[in-house]
Image 1: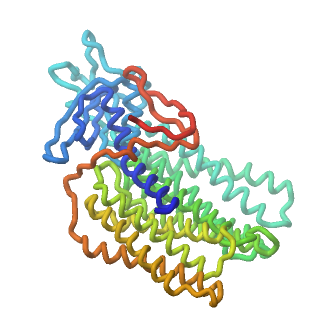
Image 2: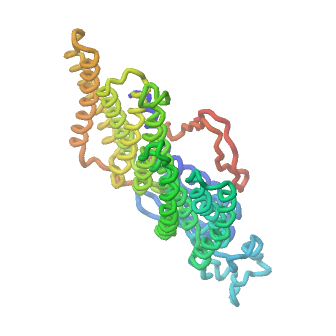
Image 3: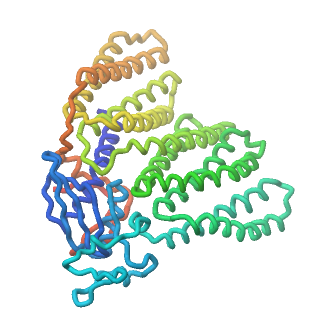
Length: 493
């Protein structure tokens, strides 16, 4: 297994299991769970009372556990569950706009009031009617509207007050300064009118923010990618953004309606789009030996911008195939890694056919091919239950095919032929053998499934690579807080 494939294996396995294991570890601080239990749903009963539903994948039996976890841990646990796509139900305080004090549970001596009906131990808080809108948000609609109006007023002012005046050279400096000052109040009023009479929950804020920024980037990136830079592409980008931006607002709000109960799925779409967009932007700088020298500079940047938009769009839609919040059989993760490795191998073949001499095109082609293979693998295995054995057999089959291709390459290699011919020969036989071995083994192992949902922890689940000091939840007594880990590699014994 080459280093590239090993790295993808670690990333795929960690991504599939680390989130669910981390949430279960955090919940185990407050709840007594069995090792085989899988968290199914979380329901907030009051400001501090949390009920979780856990299932035993082997028997299919479910249990409900209830504990008082405190206000701050409650918010962090629900946010983490939302990000994973788990079903979560949130408790609504008596007054939606009330502060933290109004949301605190009542003491035994002074039971809380909901209308004229007291909430006592004999009549638990679960029977109190909740507002369906607030039940889907961690933040109040008032806060979401304020964030929306502030963000979109700034973006609207740029689109209609800054971009157009600066797209022309003959506009005076006074006009360029005055136009955004005149447009800003209208932008504020338009966004206020849009938000004030609509439900505005977490999903709506996430969706409108995500797609509004995405529409602005796409309108500018496509203009600079398709139009020669001597023809002033910024002018075309400015006019395109006038149409793309309101469409992004409309599409973002519709996306919020779609994932109203699962706002974490919007975060997943955003992460996939951003990750693939970055790969699409930076990979062209690896395609060429001198990507930023002379006339290559504009061509490289134009390719990078166009490729980033295409891959970000693909990432947005492929994110729906990402499986989270469930126990995924080991064979699925192994299969996704295999598809990523097959994509990288195809990238090597393209580099060989292009007669690449420097290492940069080889790395760039392998990176792009591996990324596309990984994305294709997510879609291919979206409904799969491949067992661990099938995943391993398919990997062994691909390795056997590579070995067979190496044997034929050694047999037909001829020192008297051109270097290009030998390069293509070796690459084609190795890549072709790998693909053939994987496809044949995949057909032979058809039907090997594991639908129990059980997944044993192996050493890769205990390994964590932390190259950048990112914040992570930690426990102190019964409270959760954020801490920054020292960069490095850790292993849990």
